[in-house]
Length: 278
Image (cartoon, rainbow, N blue to C red; front, side, top):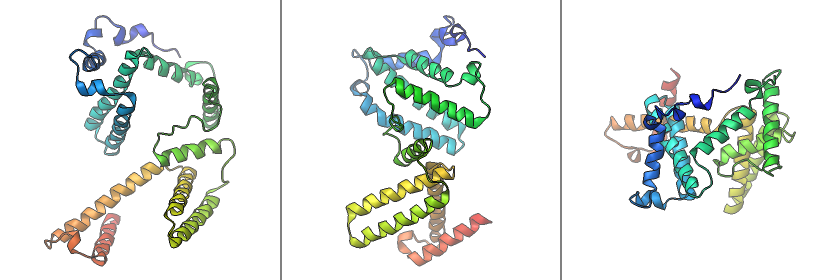
């Protein structure tokens, strides 16, 4: 299977180039960053100052997907695209690369990592394909002089997500518990160690033990093939939903949660759980 010719893209069609929305967005970003008449806020930004917005927009995309709100997803994807264009524009100003370079790089990577689609290679099954994917990534790490197994796991990922990726990468070279039983045993061990530090009143050590506990939870999620961020996000939503039930029930008597007590609210919480099971 061959890729479409670049000349077939509307971005390279002179009849459409001026009208294509992506070119309009590129022009808007260039105007915002223009030292002569641009936006002062946009002109002050750097890769470092824009990075938190990029992460935030990615989460908002995930939120729209979680809510199955396709109209909102369209808007959030636009916001995320703006981040890519913003970073690319700043890099272009420094003579490093531009948006076209970003696109070429990911095009090359996708073709390189899918020889079974864009070449003549054939994998026997999905496991073989995964092994081939990892082998190609290892070659790329070596080319970048990042030969360590964990070297290219981004430090900026959410901690729980990074923990999963770190342990998954280590597991591929045999550094892993054989089953979930050993992980659960380790989880119980970490809980016991945390209790000791809490009882001792040592906050620093309790913090360390809590980190160890969360790391084991990330391992357990990986072994269960569960994305911990998704699992916790679902539990957060459940907590909000059930607490809203408590507020609604108390409001029927003209009261708020701070005018109730734990026993009453716990009873309402259990009522919310029972209602959800029906």
